[in-house]
Image 1 (cartoon, rainbow, N blue to C red):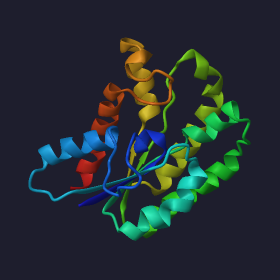
Image 2: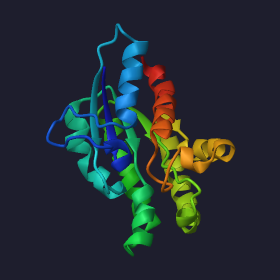
Image 3: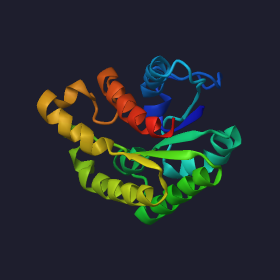
Image 4: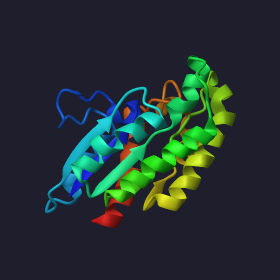
Length: 201
């Protein structure tokens, strides 16, 4: 059972890009240990293909090399937050139509290679420095959830989940900057993706 994870820094999370087997120390590594303990009789192979700073179009351009050419059984896609971030921290253009087209094409490419597709919703926690992003981010999530509903075999609504749990525990338990998850948050991400992976085992 080969599972490829593709996305941005949330997926990359310290992986050594010089080592194709490196999983980093984020949700992918946590998920690996949990799945191997749950299913000792299943032979898993995990590939982390997260790249920091990637936007949707960057992942779209990498699907053939990093996903299709690996012939995975399952592909987990978590991407989108940087499309909004770059508008606010770098003045980059944010064209939602272009983002939607790139995301749809990326998911189509994954489906075309025969993998089960788990689309993971990007998330943004409520820290003061990121509140001005929320309106645009809501639009992004609406686009991603709609397209995922057409192509994905399973969908993980992380933004909804994190904004729920952080109200009772506090945002700092899950992210210092609203974007990058703490270890506690990474465990939650892993747990929620595992629930969907189980559907295909």
